Amino acid sequence: MPRGHVLVLDDERAILTTLQKALSLEGYTVDVAGGIGVAEEKLAKRSYDIALFDVSLPDGDGVELLQRIRVLGSELPVVMMSGHATVDAAVRATRLGAIDFLEKPLSTDRLLLVLENTLRLVRAEAEAKALRTQTGQVGELIGESRAMLDLREQIARAAKATATVFVTGERGTGKELVARAIHGASKRARGPLEKMNCAAVPSELIESEMFGHEAGAFTGATKQRRGKFERASGGTLFLDEVGDMPLAMQAKLLRVLQEREIERVGGHETIKVDVRVVAATNRDIEAACREGQFRPDLYDRLNVLPLSLPPLRARREDVPLLARHFLALATQANDRPGMAFTDGGMSMLVAYSFPGNVRELRNIIERLVILTPDEMIDEGDVKVCLGGQQAAMKGGLFRPGVPFRVLAEEAERAILEEALGHHGGQMAATARGLGLERSHLYKKFKALGLRGDKGEAEDE
Image 1 (spheres, rainbow, N blue to C red):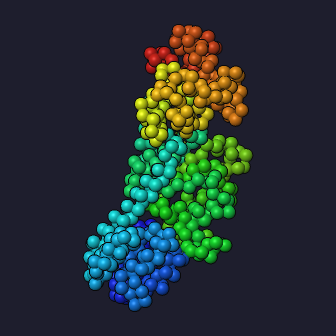
Image 2: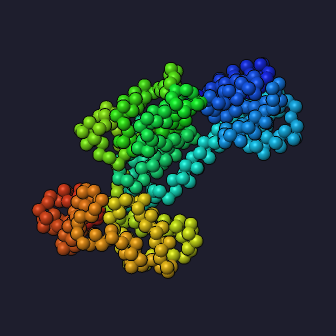
Image 3: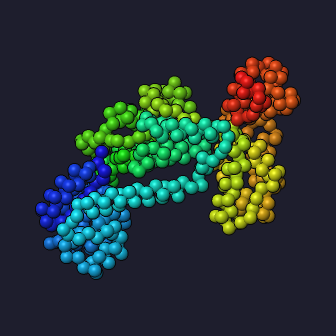
């Protein structure tokens, strides 16, 4: 896979030929332009990762071209070159956002270093921007419960491998954070991490978004555009909500995963891709396969390394850690220093089921910081914040909008906790009282994130 797509603008044919050969040998895809007009045509039709502009050209000024593309909103990284550089030209180029200013004759080693550092910086800024965008939507992988310790160990193992990872879990459990953790701990960490929400892209645009398109491929396609697979070259592509991908697109994704090559929409060139895919969904994909809504062969291809994220109610011991973490963020963002939870307020939070998981917890904490008049957040404040949700929990088992499996787990949890308390915390006695095998009861406790008699559990 190319390390990046470069446009070189210079009026000296020898320089164009030399740079094209040198950069191609280093793994770059290179387009050349001998004048301003040709460069503008290429910029209008194609997307580039970086450009090299000469300052003085027969038909114009490279710095003025840089100014024009900035006025049009382009953030293309540009390195200026000149054999007769002036301080004025260098200052103008720098103010317009030029990455560097190289003097001719060019040093190939210096040029390659500038290109590599620039692309690394651009990718790092893109990831930082994505992280800032995502901040507050899902929680971090915080927690010391057995479920979280197991998850971190699985992430570490998955990061060392190269196979496709399939992350499943309810909404708000942190599937994107898992994808970022896998990418960050992998050998591809220096490469890009691209994200695509398959449920958010209109069906008529999803192929273009994933594979890119050529200029004129459809109405509105005025220039070439690289898709997610190309932009993720050498890195990781996170396909979120892959369970909502249209069936027609599923077949095309399957082919890419099998052949490791793509074609842009409207194009005929086959492009090899070197991308690790991490896919995620909150749907029951096995049920979707049975119902004909998801391709079983694609599921098999994606489900090489499965990771299942536990819901927050299955690791309630992590709620205080998460709540305090989110409280620190929310108090800083809303200028409310010194706020804290009383024991009663925290206990009420821990008892809540959180159908929206960690994302819902964060929203609740921010709501509490904004609405609580005092510095201490007590049981009454939490009760008011939860409102009808908490009332519904106390008034009956059914709550509108909460999935059956969540309600069933809550009922099971309540029964097992009461039974365990009735039998003095003894798992063996609890199993006999409920007419269950002890091994089955242990499995239930583990699945629900409950703890019984530790000594007995270890003997098993």
